[in-house]
Image 1: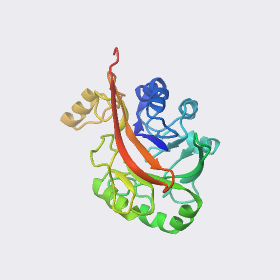
Image 2 (image 1 turned 60 degrees about the vertical axis):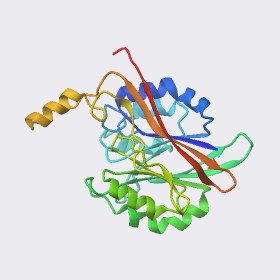
Image 3 (image 1 turned 120 degrees about the horizontal axis):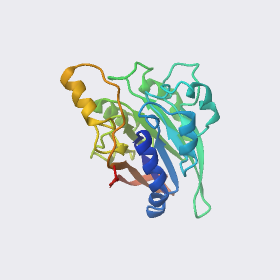
Image 4 (image 1 turned 180 degrees about the vertical axis):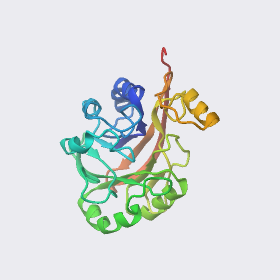
Length: 267
């Protein structure tokens, strides 16, 4: 069994390259289940209802979110219309949407796997949500009993917090992968307890900007210390993510592989 997980889709360039290349990636890597982080999919700032529908018209099984989940205010009202969208679990309740859910994956050999996808937000240099560590503790036994695989998108800024959370989940979660920084790290590995881990899977979108934004705008902001309106970068694009090879008997990751593809554009 192979699972494809793609990093933060950024703006129109990210959505377009997903639309153009996702089917090819799924076929080339024999993918059975696909997870995409979509919290930057609408202009780099949240996910609109329209863009949620656009992404879910593609072979995407789950969309995870992050700290920009409510930037497109309409999603506060429409997120419940999309059972495939998972927002950070550690928002205080009551809160629209779900922080985790269970999904069924039918494999080619008629085997069915139940996959629990969890989304959490970090606390360091991030909005001060509930502690992600303590949020998971009361759920761990129930989720493990209810699913064959537990996959966690840990949307966080600090590498130290991500690494600590990976060790905290080691031996319990199938996979802990980081999102949010838009820069893919090279520390993919399987931890001692069997949990596959990587600090950040990277970004899907413009490669020639600064984590998705037009680079001149960012440089001007850093030079003048004055605010600027962020505009999505143009030019060449990338697809970042990971591919998980799952042992169907043990329900563990046998191999975690980074995906880093670049594509030239006319602009």
